Image (cartoon, rainbow, N blue to C red; front, side, top):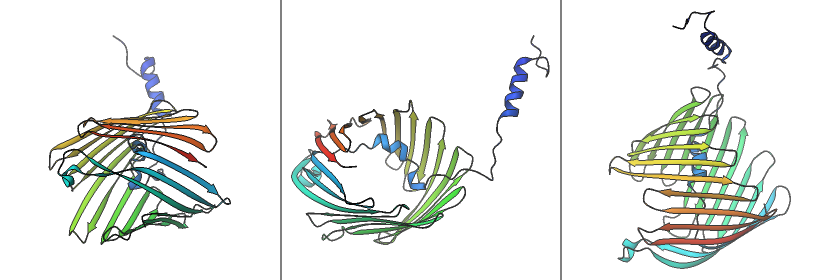
Length: 315
């Protein structure tokens, strides 16, 4: 029988040596976590490809280092649910829009972005940092249609190993969230929201674990939603991700598996879910600042098929 006493067993000696050399966790100097609303960022990069239908052309024209203009042309279809048309199949109406944008970005990270379309919709985003620990953001969407305008303002507070956010929006929306680092790889937090117009409120809890090659998150809310995500970095260029969404009120669940591959001159993204919907997005770089886009989504159950291609010019 092997001798497991210290000084005679090389296995025990190596284990004790590894324990002594293992760095101890300093709970007073934990790293800052990501924002509560960004805990699924890496997973959504693979599971939310920019799928579109029709033709899309975008050009970016810089006027100086801080100010540039954007022009976007889209020709595609507007989808109408089958229930609204008395049919089970999706009804598509051809539409075409042009969008003009102006962007101002400072060297300190402040920015002001604005977009206006030919159908009268105006959208904008503002961000200003008062200090390293305090910043504000405003997102707005204005329309001439009743009930389609919305403004949302955020106040972000950053601590040494935590962050919090206050959200105020129209119509009568209030939100609070907090995220705290528990260990160098584990963080947890929660959120609260209130909708005055609908007299509804809810609570949510979240966990996020970050490893050298993976990120795992879990969220649960009183609205009846449980979600779990996992992203694994296979190599520096390949990331696999999966998502599980469960509604315990209706006892319905949806699972999604996706990938994100970054090559030297191309990027491939795709996913497939338990409903049988398959999506794929390809961006090919022809030259510096010139990209070619291909997009496809197949939904055989609802006979809904989307195919698109486009070009982007400018960085």
